[in-house]
Structures are given as C-alpha cells and as structure tokens.
Image (tube, rainbow, N blue to C red; front, side):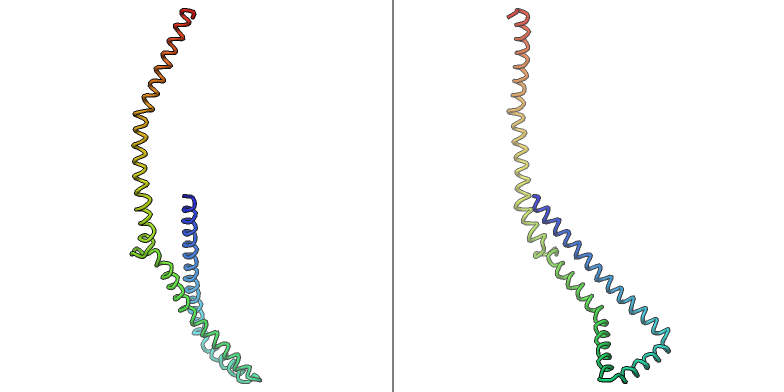
Length: 173
C-alpha cells in the first residue's frame, strides 16, 4: 500500500512538473509576443531614424572587406529567421506535450481509468469489500457466540469466588 502511494505521489509530482513547464512555455510565448509588440511600436515611433540607421548599416556592411559584411548579414538573417520561428515552435511543443501526456489520462477505452483503475476496482476493491463484510460478520458472530458468553461466565466465576472468600472468612476456613 505504501509503495502504491509513493508511486501515486511520484506521478502527481511528474504531472505538476509538466504543468509548470507548459506554463513556462506559455509565458515564453507571451514574452516573445510582448517583445515583438514593443519592438514594433519602437520601430514605428523611430521610423525615420530607423530608416537612416538601416541605410548606414547597409552602407557599412557593403564596404566591409573580405565579404565580412555579407557573412554578418547572413548571420543576422538566420537569427531573424530563428526568432520568427520561436512562437510556432513553442505552440507546437506545447501541443505535442499536451497530446502525449493527455492520451494516457483520456476517458476512452485506452485511458488509465479503463485499463488500470477499472480492473483494480473490479479485482481488488470489490473482493476486499466482500472480505470486509465477511470479517464483520465473523466478528459479530465471535462477540455474540464466544466473547460475551465467556465474559458472562468469568463474571459469574468472580462472583462465586467472592462468595467463597466471604464464606471462608465468616467460617474461618
């Protein structure tokens, strides 16, 4: 019984950890959206300055020797692509985790309720309940047929011994 409780506690702990990780994925998605929104607003506010700055950066990258500007531009493009793919990646990861973890807990024929808990209930708890009822019947029978009569006889014996003791004392025997 103690091992099953420990296993249940471990499963509960695992589910809580997964739920916390899913919340972190949601938080990361919200953070990325907030950064995008703030960056978009900053760019709109500073659009003339950003346009000039972009022209300056393009000029600098075009004039760097040994193809360095092109390499930097490719790296920045790759980072931009990576950044743009993060929201979809987070959403997909979240959906995949929920789908994988949700399947065993489903209520259908393949869920834990049907595959694990129902057989335990039918093969362990129901017979245990019947055994408990039989034990209660046995206990009631023991009390009514053995314990109470024996206690009554012992009480009678104690009363008789008390009378014998009083008789011996009275007759000095």
